Image 1 (cartoon, rainbow, N blue to C red):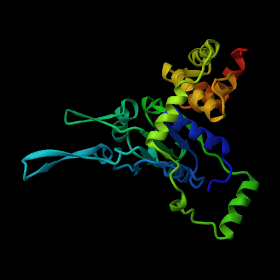
Image 2 (cartoon, rainbow, N blue to C red; image 1 turned 90 degrees about the horizontal axis):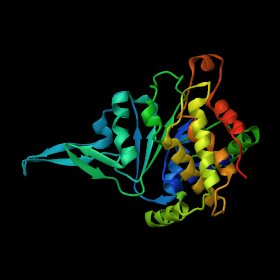
Image 3 (cartoon, rainbow, N blue to C red; image 1 turned 45 degrees about the vertical axis):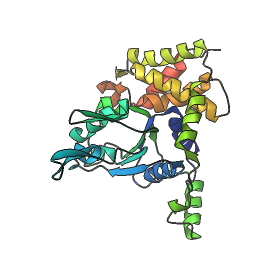
Length: 297
């Protein structure tokens, strides 16, 4: 159902195996939501979708306590966040108050309401989409929330050949993308088993040092105002293990780390105002860092 975007789909599957959340950014109409829905359909787990809007309240996401007259007490009604795969559409349309509702659940996999803590069932995956922040009616996501996403993926335009293929498909009647035709491939138990295999991947000491050096360089780079935290190092490690497994290996290579570095770091670093005014991008800085750090043999 998705034409092209092969690297993007590989990164999405990597995030599922690495047990991490994904932020998809791109202009309207490039199949961000379709991609997230399609991924959810392949897993036999509960799915929910939340459309973020400027008037959305935290209780609309987490749930609320309802008074029961017959028992004279309050009962907690879980919100749409209580699912295994949660699609948050246009996440940057909601203000900071609503964004803060996601902080605890994305990191600790729990929701605390009225003094009671509720644990999320496994797996728990947030797939969020957003339009570029320059567009009207959007809010900048807090840095602490961005840091909770394993990857930030750019969904670009299709190539000419891919767009012709999309048009041919629609012209011949394969339009409307019938998601009902997609059958689940993995159960929650299957996914847990695969994640256990991923955790057992072999990682040499020099690869661990390489990851630490790459992330460490973001804290010392002259073009960066904010470097990446140790959470970025862990994201690179877990992501590289999952990517190696997807590519049929039981060990991690420096190429795995390099392939994932832009997706892991681009939303965790901030350019200095001077670099921003010059038209620099986080991806360019990440590329410079990869070129400057010696690759282990």
